[in-house]
Image (cartoon, rainbow, N blue to C red; front, top):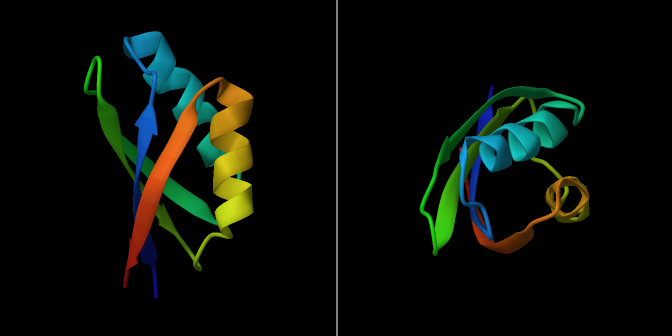
Length: 77
């Protein structure tokens, strides 16, 4: 079974930003896909498909490593 985790990321303004966050998130164990809807000047929607639920701290650390901030997230089965 796969899990989809959706959360917001603040501070992204361009395709390079999307690429940086995607790269960090796809490096997490079990991540199969990352989709980002860029919202310049707002909170961009990020959906991550993974083999199992992702730990909150792992997601936050990956996004911070890319240089951005996570807003609250929700998980969907």
